[in-house]
Amino acid sequence: MKLYNTKSRRKEEFVPLSPGKLKLYACGPTVYDYFHIGNARAFLFFDVVRRYFEYLGYEVTYVQNITDIDDKIIDKAMAENKDFHQIAQYYATAFLEDCAALGIAHPTHQPRATEVMPEIIALIKRLVESNHAYEVDHDVYFDTASLAEYGELSGKKIEDQKAGARVAENANKKHPADFTLWKKSKPGEPVWSSPWGEGRPGWHTECVVMSQKYLGETFDIHGGGIDLVFPHHENENAQARALTGKPLARYWMHNGFLNIEGEKMSKSLKNFFTARDILKEYDAEVIRFFFLSKHYRSPIDFNRELIQEAEKALQNFYQALQSVDVLNIPEHKLQDSEILQSEEDFKAAMDDDFNTAKALACLFELSHNIKNPQKSPASKEDSALMLLKLGKVLGFFQNLNVRLRNTMPDLSNQLIELILSYRNEARANKQWAVSDKIRDDLQALGILIKDNPQGSTWERR
Ligand code: AMP
Ligand code: ZN
Image (cartoon, rainbow, N blue to C red):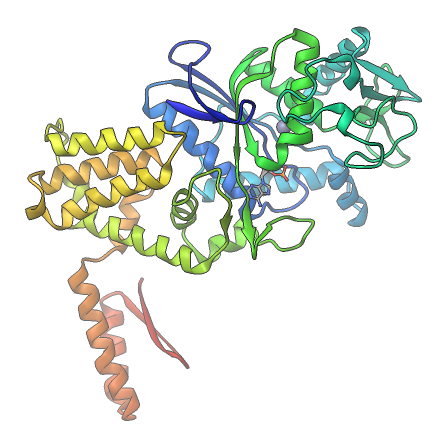
């Protein structure tokens, strides 16, 4: 398998630290609001990474943190006159609910920053003791000049960082690139006791603590959105390097942005849709399909037409699966060479740095085979079983029973459309009794008609 490693800027052969095991860490949310559909891209992508390794037979330990102490959480708590803990608790619960609604499997471990405070303080203490960090007036900074490897992930060198440029100027720092490990609290802010007085940690230490706690000093893959490469991941890696002499992770994977009108979707630009709201409009699988139809490192534009295409493609899969009554096919070994080849093609695509767009093309081909069995010697049923198997690897078909019940065969859809067109004609001719009878008769069959100024729509109850 080849993975693009942000650190080397090229695709590398993936070799796990321990054969058959994958140790994966991806940064989770800062819980001060509902997460947006751009964040969902990151959460969904690493869910697919985890699922794919599991399908390959790896024993996966997947850790994702929840940042539940941060300036933004404190600001929101103050604005709403609440305790920071209340805000963090509320949005952490919302995060879990929305991830579940998106069909994201629960990570193996999901620790929160406030749960590991003694470990965070201990780590900072070790950095101070080994002269990789220094205290100024109850604040503690990482001394970037003390580490020759600083910049090894992002390629940024500390000499390039001018005071007042990317890093806010701070007279207490020895160098503008030095970053905060511990900060003394202002009045009214939450505090923890530490050797440097009462305060709280900066953002970059918690991920080192939580990843190493469950995955060891160096683990296989560290992930997140591309915006996290610098400074967050560079600074995580620097702390681990300073303490152990080893990099924090061997492979660094970063997903591209979800953009909106060419700009990154973000809270600060206020150009976002929450995942929660989008899920009111579209099924979770449609969102998953929309993201997977592009390579994870490419930017993707939030585009309703593309989302609707994803919706149609999924509908196509479900119709194919339903046409062979896939839930009732007895289990058996698949032997047809053409079908087994599609699994190989799927793997080859995924092994090429998670080319999910190409992997989806394999699913399309299977779906096509089901619908046009004469084109392929492979049997319809076996194609359906393979479609199901590979779709599940990408996280689809999680509610198969419900979906299949709601996906009617083509012909019934067409018949309903036909009946509806007669009813529209009756309505146009003001034949209200006829139109009402059609509506009531369809309703008795479980088909609900909704009339609106643009016309009538229908759905199954
Ligand atoms: P945050 O809560 O801001 O730390 O973000 C959580 C995750 O979402 C991180 O991995 C970010 O890199 C990622 N992320 C944030 N905005 C976007 C976006 N517009 N597109 C894709 N990923 C994003
Ligand atoms: Zn992190």
